Image 1 (cartoon, helix red, strand yellow):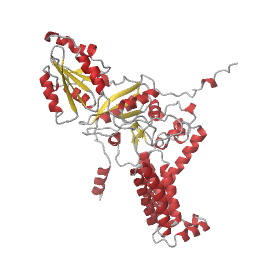
Image 2 (tube, helix red, strand yellow):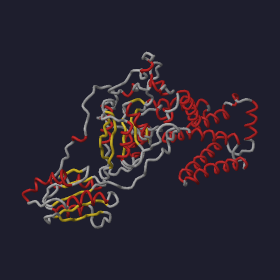
Image 3 (cartoon, one colour):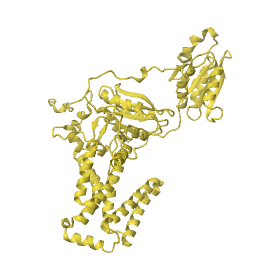
Image 4 (spheres, one colour):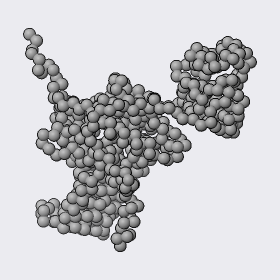
Length: 546
């Protein structure tokens, strides 16, 4: 039995190698920042650009399976002295007018030169003739092919032992729209799109400092999906930055499509009900996290950004809390917390009370519940599970239906199903009320991933409440609290900050602090440049102007 239990735990729980020590986020003196632009690209002999243009052309055709690949465009041209040249790009990923005017036209204006002058003109191709802002020369074929796959244009000239890569990307993409899942009446109304540089520009538009580092990364051995790791160099803890970089570089998947896949690769335990990273579609939320000393990950092709590290409290916060006045924001947060607790515990508490603790129900209410369930043929737990599964089916169907039909399906389907179930004596009216309140509470959860965890927890508490009553509910809360306390997110405890009265981070975790108290960096992030002053309103301390 013990061997079987160990095998099950080994399958569902991630256990790191014993040689790897667990990462803890601690304070550290400021060190020199890593700059990806200073890395030297190593090349091999088979990876070098040849001075013979025919060899380069044959290599490119073979590597890109030309002409089988219908969207690969190879344009051969002649320079003024009949010297051969060609350029290659992927149709649909470049701006054609830019290729015509800034590349082909300028190349044809290159003056005559002899073979002895080739070395002089290798640098002048970019310095004097190619009229494009972003261009580079390299002798690595892998680098050039990677740029082509990312929407660039490559140029090869006969006699040159280097190729030229030009950034002429221009593929179709969505415009900047309003956030869909993190809506707020106040604050900015911009959301991330699938374009990498558009997303980084949205963040830089808010944080206007050269200390904001956008460190380039590539994930996927074959797909080589590009992204950036954002952090503010003089605020973020260097150990945190190094740990995030280490985990990203340790992903050895062949293909990475979306940032959600990266999030699952970064988490320490696979089967936890709470996510270890915070995913957001709002640039203002990312900017605020960076100023606190966190690290953000933006991936090309994904409209959501990962924020690391996070904790159990921040997953329950809403974007609107930052833009409402303190009384309004605290009221909103209290209502949201009550709704989340009801979505988890209300069905289990209902079963525990009606099955084991009827003495706490007022007499007339107990008569009403008993009369409503008189003709229902199923036990309460079966009745509750049937309605809960039906509600989840309606939710899933509404998500996957077209938008106008989905909202109608959710309202009409719920009303018709509930009314029909009561009329057919399958469920009691009080059960419909319990399921409705539970469903509304689940929709009030601010983080979508966290709502999935709460939906699974709800089933666990339903079973515990139906078997052991209040004792089962209490045991479930105790075990889940221990489970949360044992989790960590990039070196910080998942239940950080520590519950101390003097801890400003703790008060902000539960209630909303005034805006003039939010300049203090959370202590559990161990930021390199922590701000500890409360005075951000100098007009309160200066003398009145007479």
